Image (cartoon, rainbow, N blue to C red; front, top):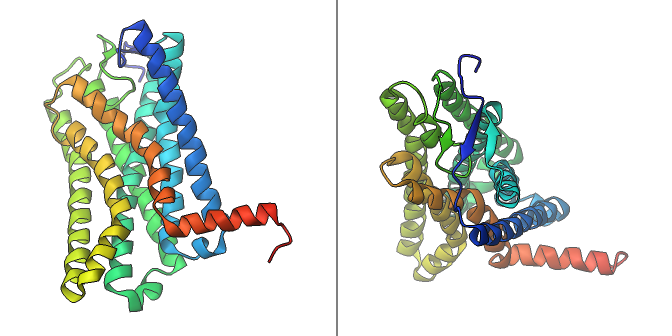
Length: 309
């Protein structure tokens, strides 16, 4: 860090228009409020309701809500502050911290979504051995693997950035610090670094996405081959997860695997996995999930009738 001349970076942001920035600040603030409340609701329901707490699927869902909240908290509050105060600068250390935690929580979430697909595969295709294969100690170990994988991924990304010298310019063509935009500001040839970046973030996104598609393909083909009605039920069961996967992985593939798109498309893609997906996840999993609705109903009855049994 001391070898770099740049001490701060300036974000070009989403828009330079005053009215547009005001509108965006309102929308971003509302989205972040929804992210906090919605994901807190899911985590609370899972850990309050004993029926959900015993289920591996809801254990993973609670961790997904925690990761969604953490991921959006890395980017969205800073974005809202920039839109309201018109100050678009961030220190060098702040930029590196943002980059590290963005990839830490994002990488962990990619691995967790893949793990959730495996959980659904075992539950639907191997129901007799599901409780044995997905017992609580094993679920905790798998969850720790997701967090460790995210840490390894983010550490390698930060290492790639810190070995580069930055002597100007310092304008990041985005609304937060990320590897593709920061690498372009280095004072040396970054071809090797960009290749390593694609191999790291891009292939992680692609491999996880392919595994997810294969998992759900096996689930649907297996059940559809056995019972016609079960194919539709399986599709309904997995549709929430598939929706989340599409909203999260496809923008990541655009940004990291194929870094040839315009900066404006990168910004739009970034909005999806940092803001829109964490905002929609609670609605997708709570409003479309019967068990979650029943848990909310039980919690409501306990609050209204605390001595009711």
